[in-house]
Length: 199
Image (cartoon, rainbow, N blue to C red; front, top):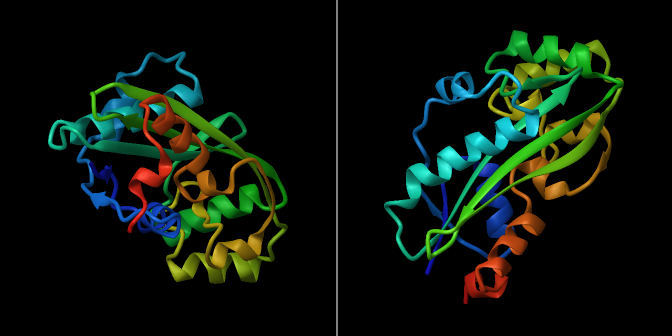
């Protein structure tokens, strides 16, 4: 039995590798915009990220019967609006000017499909207090490109760590995958974490 990560995120892979698991990488190909537009207008932010994570996991699970498949999706909730990846330098600067010195909530939806096909869907929520970064540092950080493909336009584990004053919650979920949530899902399948450790 293997643990399959329905993502190409190097951060999610690094979390698992640091925790003793070398996952099989099988990035899901889903249309996130179409999935979001198909949701009812009253869907909560937590339901949105959970829905995307579920779609990713289920898109891959059929190719890996008997394995555990993990799909995730992260977004930053600020002023009642979900924010995904900025994709550009200019958008990164715009977002950082809006979030510097403020507290927001990072939501990471998870879908873990067990070897019997049963799925556990849940969302990890972590409070993020951003530093009052200077305009020069915001511009320099945006220019690195590090955060362009990161939810909320920041990283915790790399250069972006300079500009996060505090987190309240699970640090691994901020990086992209909650180890506590994954552990609970594995236990619900009758599995243990150590089943997946590299020998």
